Length: 116
Image 1 (tube, rainbow, N blue to C red):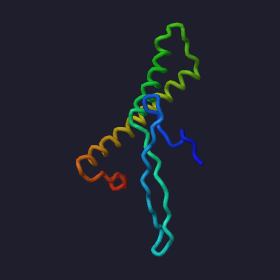
Image 2 (cartoon, rainbow, N blue to C red):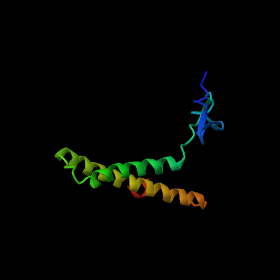
Image 3 (cartoon, rainbow, N blue to C red):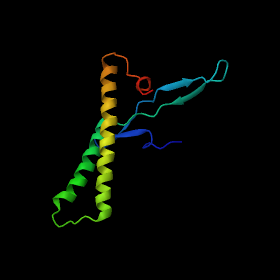
Image 4 (cartoon, rainbow, N blue to C red):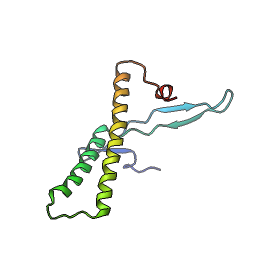
């Protein structure tokens, strides 16, 4: 059996039941047995926004500390973080554009068509 916490979302300090996840039926081949599974609910987008803000705040603390002297390893890590954030920016931008197209009922772009 699953616990109450596993089946609930924290809402305003109280446990609120989550709506059931939609069932998805998949069939691999004609005449094969269908498999049924539940999709995991997506976390709210506000959670992603909060994580990005936490990362920026954490990195900002290093800059604000005038007594902090970075090591060579720290400088490498700052550069790696910069690169990762830049790549994440590009991914989120592509997804945002696709979501806008989906919202307006327009077809999504097939990037594989253009990358050949």
